[in-house]
Length: 78
Image 1 (cartoon, rainbow, N blue to C red):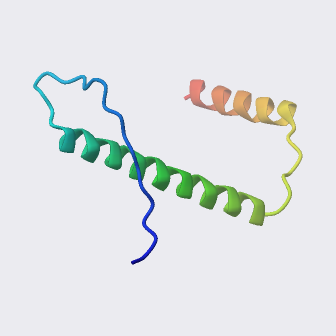
Image 2: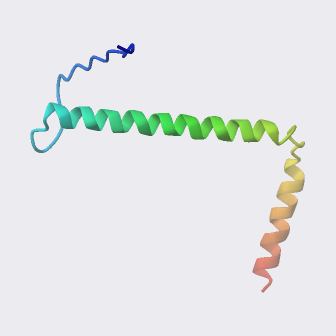
């Protein structure tokens, strides 16, 4: 028989308007766990993409502010 990990979950309280069954609580927990795992995968993928894109370019705040001011002046002159 394959080695199957055992998972124990203690349900001390279920906050719901109506009484949830243990199986409903477990399904909810599994859904949340899977959602967290998918989010971790997504973040790892984004991290890898960012690292692969090369080194970061220098950031010049003055240049960014000047460009924003120019856009603002251009939009208010119309």
